[in-house]
Length: 428
Image (cartoon, rainbow, N blue to C red; front, side, top):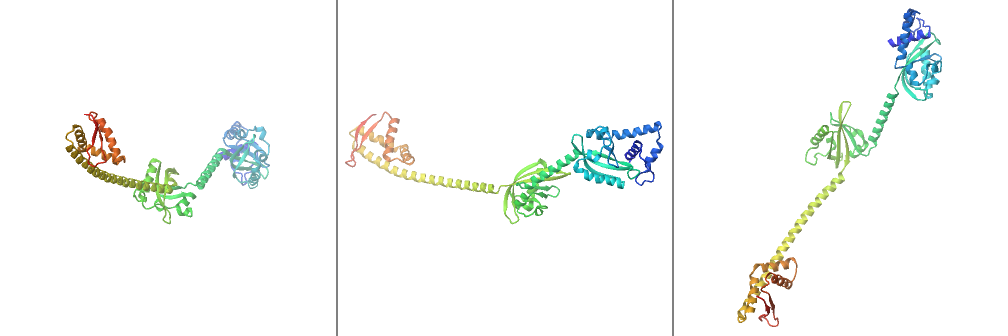
């Protein structure tokens, strides 16, 4: 109110505008002040004080006559627009300082101020000398003594930066909302205080198996989950655990068993994070459907278990077969060696007159008595699948290396059964 009074007094003293006391829109204060302020030194100081107050104000102040001409403009507005005072006084305000797209609207506002003597408020752009546009918020107050004799002044604040920030914020909100709505990744928001869904995108609606957003809002995580989670914990209890962990750590990733309205169970990897807005805590989550991956993992685990069982069974069959073959070979070979031993003993008793054959027979008899000989024949037949004759040849070679001082060469005549062998040669 003091500023308005100062402006009216300043304008009345500066521009010598008559201001009858009976005018409905002209308060008595300016006339009273003007009548008290004369050409004395005090009057000039008061006038200078009001001028300084107007000129030093950071707000834009402009006085516009009833004919639309610019009467005065303070220093703040002149600097912002890039003009000198002599360049603006007497200029048509609308055509000089208002962009073309705003002129029609502002002309109507000016007409209302002049005709109705009413204050007005609006937001419009200012056109600077270099072509820049400044967005200003205006308040207009009329100072008139007659229909045409007077003016009105406008006080404005430069809100260009604020408008740019608002527009940027709005664009950012629209951009984020567009990302949220068009994302193919299911996204949802939970109010921590109620543990209920307060927002979700179309992808979340679809993956949950609902037909509208309203069906999802208000539900709790337990409402869209399988009764029991992977470790056997009830879903409601497990959901509280992960919510508390996200609030404590800021974010958490886990796997979750969901269930659609018709009973279908599906698996998801959940990325849960906490954030605050307007002093309230929220949880935002995104979902990744891993049902196919979980089924593949389960199938792989079952396949591995079957392979382990099959491998164990095969190993058991092999061991049983080895045992059976070993027993058969051992029995057969033992019988063969026992018969040879008996034959050699008979031969040795019949040929007592010659020491060399007798020594050879007893040497072979000693081999048959030794358990290593039986074991060697058995292992050769079982592991390397060689014939008895091949095993005998191998034995000859090994035995000659292990006992070089008693090399025996035997030849059996097969045309007569039980004919003693003839010693070809020996070395003791």
